Length: 309
Image 1 (tube, one colour):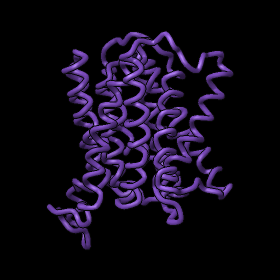
Image 2 (cartoon, one colour; image 1 turned 180 degrees about the vertical axis):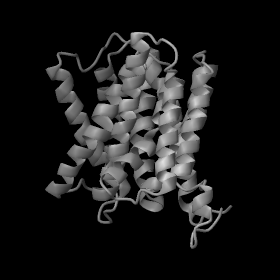
Image 3 (cartoon, one colour; image 1 turned 90 degrees about the horizontal axis):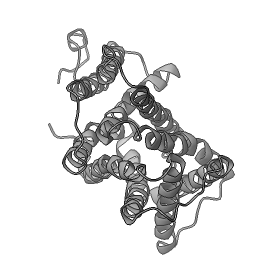
Image 4 (cartoon, one colour; image 1 turned 90 degrees about the vertical axis):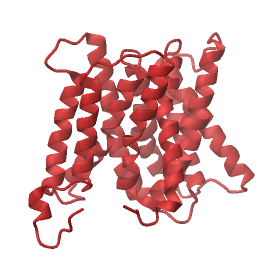
């Protein structure tokens, strides 16, 4: 099946999946030494610096609309400051692959939020998809077996980050990415700059040093990759794909992220998975396909005016 207009955004979409999939690997390396707030601060500062450099080279200026900067502040809370810190905290207790599986629930969280706000109609497929997704989450958690406190806390932190992404994606699509007066690089730079200031203030208030100069070289290289690629370039690609393909299509990037995360986590870090984690991930991905209409219920296919796929 050929997707209309995919040639414009599909290459950026695939690069985004690869970058974000490997971001969980870099987070895992960094949290072996650094605190979660330090990881969040470093990746946002480096990401913002990379995008500000692009803005300067392209001779563009940052937005001057104070309302847009207000939207940046809100979007930064739910798209960077809180979820970046939660993922860094979570990966202290769970593998990078498991963290990426929790990240794959983002489209379901986005759908739940849009249905809650009545921005989309609660069709049978969407409701069934949310129910199946909840079942997939329970399978990943392995609720039938005892779980150590650290593993449970780490999983819940990563799931909380996915919930933030779901809220943030809906907010960004409503108030930021629809703007035509500013190019994606300017919007992404403004948001990351706002997030860097936020997490910097929070880190200082928490009494955590902003920078740990004693960290080994592998940690610094991981932070550079996480910041410049996984945050800077990735957010530029995110804005570009969302502007061309829409919020819902862009959220399906989470289909591919666990694949790239598994490749780096299992092969490079030597991580292992329990059987329920990949099975739960497949259930979650199936629920996303169902909720987004890629797979339709029989009752919907038989309804007049609903084409079968």
